[in-house]
Structure formats: structure tokens, C-alpha cells
Image (cartoon, rainbow, N blue to C red; front, side, top):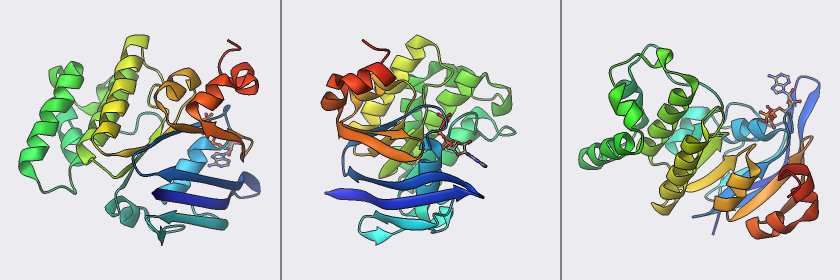
Length: 237
Ligand code: ATP
């Protein structure tokens, strides 16, 4: 079943035409990845889906209802959660308080407690640092914290913007395993990644974006086998 359907999306920053008629679909239960070079428009797309940017043209339907141009809060309430690129934690709050915030829309206190333990089991570093102010964590630690917060939110649709950025190789593996686990537990995922190899290894389907347009789409296997994709995005192997 189609969970998210984007059609002919056009987004501008002033005179800059960042998304030029993007169409894509995410089905319930899938992991879909967006790959593309720097500046292709991947973050712009996620920001538009989560209500941070308003499209000039095009439609976004989520569970059969239009959310194009809706307020960010109402999109979160509808079950879409966005983990943006970079260090977007609440710097003046502790690690623990940041994780707690992820669950602010939930009421199942037993489940919240279990998920808290799961976050700490996945990222022991966060347990060690739970009383530390988040602004003083390293970049990689802040990235783990942002993922931990997303694990607590249990959204229906999770938008992840470059979750592996700035992480050591071992931690990249952990993050991708966490993404798989979150998906297995029922969250649909739209993943933006520079690390196309890793992204395709966990995705069901993928879209390649170039200068604001979708230029290739298909199953992860199809893209892994495509000469064009291999050459441009998979290091030519
Ligand atoms: P990256 O992988 O480098 O993060 P991206 O695919 O996520 O790239 P976007 O951040 O979506 O790319 O940017 C798409 C285009 O829009 C780029 O040309 C960028 O310079 C431009 N852009 C992004 N944000 C703004 C802004 N606030 N004002 C003007 N132009 C912007």
C-alpha cells in the first residue's frame, strides 16, 4: 500500500529552483533510499515532506491525505518524524532529556521504558554520557543521540538525512543495523545517504536525484547492477 506519494514537486529558494518536478512513492513497510551528489536536492525534499519548506507546485499525499504545505507540528502528529542532517540536538539539555523528548507524543509508559533501555543497549556511549549536556558531545555522539531520539519516537514514517555522516566505520555499521531494526518493528523509512553502497544494501527501492530531478529509480538490486549507478555513485566497482 502506498504510504507516501509525491507528484511533480517543485521547490524554490528564492530564484533557485531546487526541486524540479520530483515524483516518488514510498510503500508501507519499505526502506527507500535517495542517492545523489552534493546539492542534488535530497535534504530539500525531506524538509519539504516534513513541512519545513513549502512547495510552489506539486502534491504530497500521506496515507491518502494531502500534507503539502501543512504545518510541521501537524505532520509530526500524523506520524512522520525527521532526523535532519548534522548536529540537531538540544544543546542545553542532557543526553537523557534529549532521548526522553523523542517519546513526547507517546503514552505507553511501559513501552517507553523498554525503548529507553534499547537505546542505551544500542549506544552504550549514550548511557555513559547520559547526564552530559548534549552540546558538548562529539559530532558522532550527537548523531547517535539523534538516532536514539528517533528510536523513541516510533513514527510510522521516518525521514533520515545522512545518518552515517561523520561516523567511524564501525559506528556506521551499527547505525545501519539500527535502521534495519527500526524498520522491522514497523516503521517505514525514507533514507538520504551519501554512502550509496550501504544504503542500497538495506533498501528495498531507491531513487537517484541529480540537480533537482529524479533520473533513475528501481529496486535496490537493479540500481546495484546498473553500470551508470556503479560508475557515478558506487565508486566504479
Ligand atoms: P548534500 O548531500 O550536499 O547535503 P542535498 O542533495 O541534500 O546535498 P540540498 O541541501 O537539498 O542538497 O540543496 C539543493 C540545492 O539548493 C543546492 O544547490 C543548494 O545550494 C540549494 N539550497 C539549499 N538550501 C538553500 C537555502 N537555504 N538558500 C538557497 N539555496 C539553498
